[in-house]
Amino acid sequence: MKIVVLTPIFKEKHYGGEELVSYNIARRLAELGNEIHVVSRGEAGLPEESAEDNFLIHRILCPGMPLISTFYFWITAFFLIKKIRPDLVHCLNVQMGPPCYLNKKFFGTPFIVFAQGMDVYSGWKFKKTISEIVFRNANKIVALTENMKSKMPEKWRKDIIVIPNGVDLKKFEGIPKEKSRKNLGLKDGEKIILNVGVFQLVKGTHYLIEAFDILRRRMPEARLILVGGGKEKNNLENLAKEKGLEKSIKFTGFISNDEIPEYMAAADVYVLPSTFEGLPVVILECLASGLPIVATKIGAIPDIVEDKKNGFLAEPKNPGQIAEKILQVLSLSQEEKSKISSNNKEKAKNYSWDLIIDSLLKIYNLCCQKK
Figure 1 (cartoon, rainbow, N blue to C red):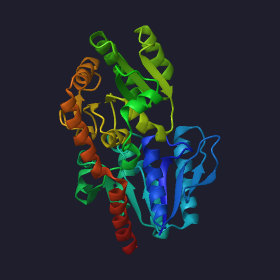
Figure 2: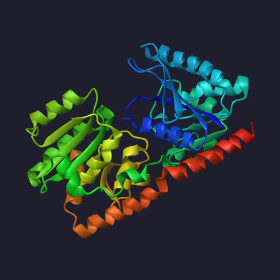
Figure 3: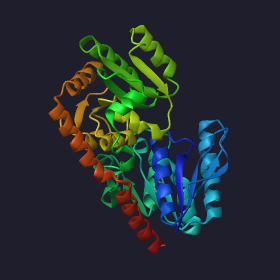
Figure 4: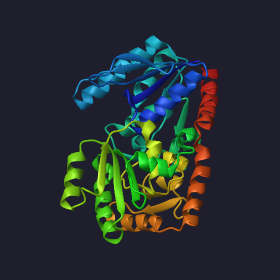
């Protein structure tokens, strides 16, 4: 089967959640003998076309003005998909839908739309009109969770299938905590709090630093590791300095996703303080690593993080409550920590990429049969 995976961005190093999802879908489908073409926006310095793990990547470099950039991408992607002539297009974001709609209208190419969260939960230009066109014409609509499905237009809900994103379970197996800490230069007695992501306001990292400031007064051995980068990095570093925390907070910068398992193995708790999320892949990675989670009650997070079972939930924009939940995790007995770790690893099995790809292939075959 020839398949186009249409995704917002596809860099050479896969840092973001949607990139990891599109990469894993493309790689695993290619391993099964399918011809896979990833089509995405480009960035300066990235090749227009390249090959990776037996699939092809086509990047469209767009003008800088947001609205013009969007229309340019849609039109160029339409012609590129026409040229590839796929059996099916896997659209990894509702906003990516217009080129798929046009190819179906003019050439009969079936497509599925795989909503990722921000395209459902957030507001964006022409959302109502574009969602209506895309959902009406998609051969199948997929949501990541039941919560996400409930936020999608009511008249389509009966037709929406729930399939989550996946996680590579093997990457997180059998990594010794002591060895990971030694490799990362961490001390045995330190309580390690971890956060991974792009530094944007909606990620709430500043609330985590404020929570950490509160926590440190009660637990001086706590350390915070912030993995990632972005436009808010300078502001976050300045906030850490203002609070006198620069020696207790480590900013690693961006790292390869292949390095994330070692950081999770070394950590005592993962904290997601976002004010807005869909279903972040990093939460699934926490499950696979058996790492306890403290997360804000937003988006699809409560579908994954069950309060006091595999983690703790806090209200967004509430540093005091976030700090209290972190303290609860760090104060757990060894037996309680082991139980949470076991619950997470068991839950992670539901998100194995083998299961996800199997579900997607069944949908692909149904769509192509109706072509």
